[in-house]
Length: 373
Ligand code: NDP
Image 1 (cartoon, helix red, strand yellow):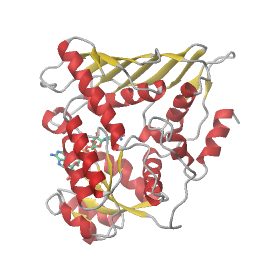
Image 2 (spheres, rainbow, N blue to C red):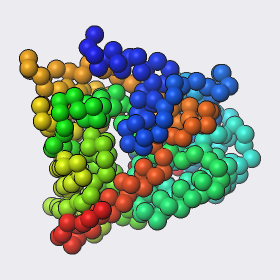
Image 3 (cartoon, protein in one colour):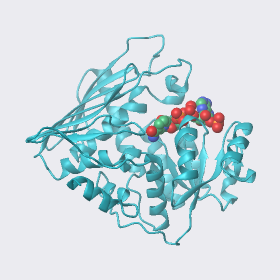
Image 4 (cartoon, rainbow, N blue to C red):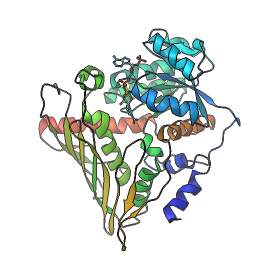
């Protein structure tokens, strides 16, 4: 067994993946996981029964999470909600729609609201959930502006509830290993990072291409993974950004919705990151060039099949780390924090950092100049 695999398995005991994620960006502590009340599973309500909820989150909550379970459904489509309720054994009394959502405050089955709506709806439902006394897990991107992020953080703070952002790669072993290799300078200091995330978008009528619902284009949706990777590999915050937006199909990509974005981040320690985000083509690789070699994840952000490798004297070798269900790991880690009254490692403040940098990326592209952060 390789060193990295041995280390990973050791840390995986309990919810070690979450513990290992702790120093990734936030610096928050990550003690070994235990439930405050053994056997207690927190109840999660999903808001927005779309493709992510249906293909990943609900199955994970139904079959794979250890500390939480699917307990509520919030949807604009009652028939769909009833059908899901049957499939996932959710009582019909725990179904809500967007109008009566606030009544969730009276439902003791629900501890956490997981917001899985189009981006521009994240702020409203996070704030309403916090006011209803629930903890909130909000999908990425956190919101569509820094102002909204501030309002979400303030609402959760005022309610005394935790707010976490759905950064699933903080709980994925190969991405965690990238951050560790950089942090511990295993191959020396990292000098250059290349991070690319993209996919070819289909249906032109979908909300992702509607600025009022998406708040932007590929950057907020998928490029955010490249930004995250650059930050957790560099292990510090960028000081400046320069960027270009490219549109080859102005019919599909209306003003304010980018097709592709290239951005360059400068870090105070001297590392530079070249990042690409695209709705025009598949991009799926995070690479770090250090003084003594390189390491990468490729593919970097699939739900399954992520592979990491690093250079060595006998040629590249795989990280050889076990696969995990990203969403089960993310939700169990958040539940563990709530049950043990520890702060999440992916708080609203982390989502806000990305939102601020993404705003600067768009500003740089618009002005054609470097923006200091
Ligand atoms: P979908 O379009 O598949 O689902 C969104 C759901 O939101 C809809 O099914 C609908 O649920 C509800 N909704 C409410 N109002 C609207 C509206 N005006 N237009 C469209 N939908 C509406 O989106 P995804 O599931 O792909 O994405 C949801 C969120 O999850 C986004 O913020 C996205 O960035 C994030 N995401 C994160 C991923 C990750 O890997 N972490 C991967 C994919 C997405 P209902 O019919 O029940 O009301």
